[in-house]
Length: 361
Ligand SMILES: NC(=O)C1=CN([C@@H]2O[C@H](COP(=O)(O)OP(=O)(O)OC[C@H]3O[C@@H](n4cnc5c(N)ncnc54)[C@H](OP(=O)(O)O)[C@@H]3O)[C@@H](O)[C@H]2O)C=CC1
Ligand SMILES: N[C@@H](CC=O)C(=O)O
Image (cartoon, rainbow, N blue to C red; front, side, top):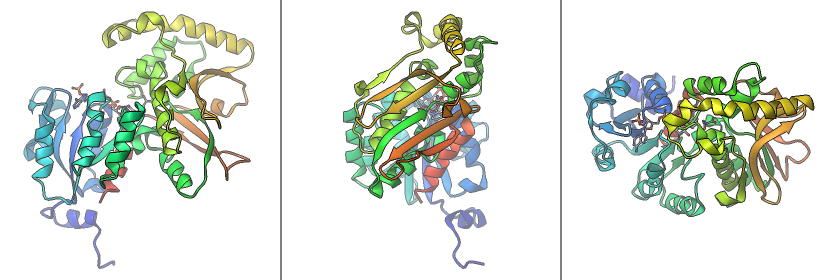
């Protein structure tokens, strides 16, 4: 047996030992809720949760944080939301590593990631709003990273599939990305892998939402915005500092549903059905299928949108929430390097967050 105990083994064998990582969790929804479950597994023994928050309430008291019903209880109990009190809880802990985990889709919170990094906290995020947002925000993030904090972003693309890490490694080795293409949305993959006209598109969308695949506002998926963010994140990892307005985006949200609130949109989902049924029938008549694809070509031209693909297209061989990333590079130039697998869902996304947090120790 090894004489050196890993941090995890040391904490498990001595519950009084100080955990190596103190963490604050922002967001206790689909992904945050699954992350809380993972915290109760042996793999997370080196992590101590010192704060947790939803949009309205937060908790920093150890006995409440240890409660398995924390997520439910936060809906009605806890202190009023205040980032400063959560960061103070991190400061008060003697763990060597202090991390803020962002499992929200909140743009305002994402805009604080750089400040937290500059103040010495690490940030692990499923929230794509900063890295996949406007270029000045992304540049501020790069500058903040120079101060030594680490930014765990595996969950932002492919729900943790090893695509960001692969792109970074290739770039580190001097291999340049030439083209990038594929299906970058788990919910849109789920929808178009199944949609065959036999049931309304809106019914499939409701199911995708129940399964936790869509964004809190599913229009972020249907509008192509979420896919565009992922394309920006990947392009930037590969060295293309693209602006959002350089990505051509096709939205599937009808004009009439763009300005309404989320509840109204969810109540009027059937308005999606007719236009999509027509697109589907046209594609089918020509022997094609519909897939929502993202593409970045060698000249930096980027597009996301619905494409009619032939029956032998690689994207027609996807199942469930599968994502597919085909990377052509200077060294992978005869056949692309393809990364494929489930690209949405609570468990895989929470695991991506956990992996990034554990990598900090
Ligand atoms: N679902 C998936 O498969 C994947 C999701 N992601 C990303 O994960 C993030 C979360 O998604 P998901 O869990 O599905 O969304 P949910 O809507 O289920 O959960 C979002 C959570 O964030 C909370 N929240 C919102 N604003 C704040 C705030 N200011 N402070 C603290 N908490 C806040 C909400 O609080 P309240 O409960 O009060 O509303 C809610 O608990 C998104 O950025 C999404 O893009 C990434 C990869 C895959
Ligand atoms: N809503 C997103 C979730 C992961 O980022 C998707 O459908 O891919």
